[in-house]
Length: 445
View 1 (cartoon, rainbow, N blue to C red):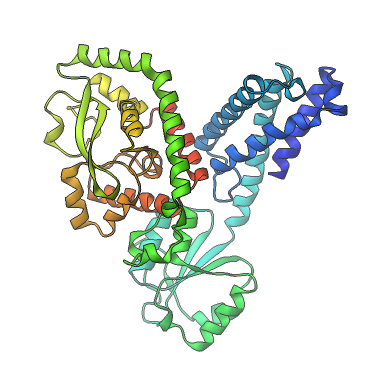
View 2 (view 1 turned 90 degrees about the horizontal axis):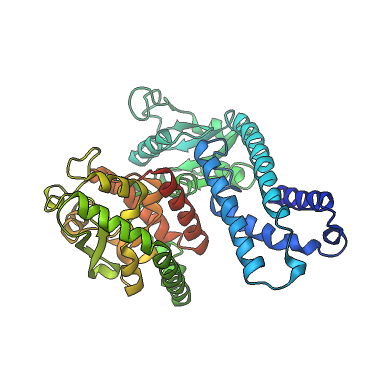
């Protein structure tokens, strides 16, 4: 954040001098404060200040470019439309030129720092104390989204030493835990305990205390998975999870009112902007296939209260009930429907559900009334997702593709539970940015 602040201010300074706008240097330097604050807020929302973000990826680059565009537009709206103070206004060429320069310089700096961090991390590791089902699930999750650090597993009982933790190709289980802890160096980023704390003897416990308050923290498995993968793993939960977690914002009436006000404002603005497009979409749907342009279906809302949800019809008439999942290259989907699903434009009629208060702009996906009962019987903690209003978009929607089976539903539930337990305005901003990215690059189904 400090580097970004210095870089952006320096670019404003240099370009203002080149434009002979000496007043910025001598008197109106505070013009840069608003764009700097907006830059910090928006970039923080896309993970640009997180050590866990791969800033070398194409996805991050596209998100960063989109974020800078949002910052520029927001600055123009606030400064040139809502402010009548000339002292706050840059010249029309300085602002876009400054942010274009900032975009290139900041991306270069991030890639350079991220590459160096990756080199350092590849020499470091996490040590997992445990070989139980939680340890195995932790390895599977870690293997699906590999990090730069590698992970090692140690058996406290000494009965599984040498065996792979999770089948062929997985790390071999190590032993002699106490000696490892005593000789632990600074190349370990943390120790993860998956087995019951009662399995620790006094010597191991004392050594863990010493390491935890020096350089190697003891990390609960749930905390590790939430921080690294931003989802709540079902396999480490218990029925008391909601009472143990900090879910104050979910129960905070003031934040709920703020979220409702934002929902109404965003829904009204988007309705006005997209009315011409929605008319065109409705015509195209009717031209391609018979039946209404709007598809209505009973869905489950907050506190398991059913409501009628509206979407643009993307399938041929009377074909949606044949299978509850939409497959890749599903023959039921029309040509117009495929484009609508890729761009997520089929969700636009749900703005009416938001205005009615049945949905929020952001929240878990509203599921069918019929399949919800099935999921609640087969999946533990599925009913937790009904603690908040369903959303047009959400944390699960932007992090996981459309589900095709019960396994996908479990995976998406873990992201929904993360949203419920980390409910915040910044997370909502992050989701909105990721949703815009998906819409622009066609990653729906």
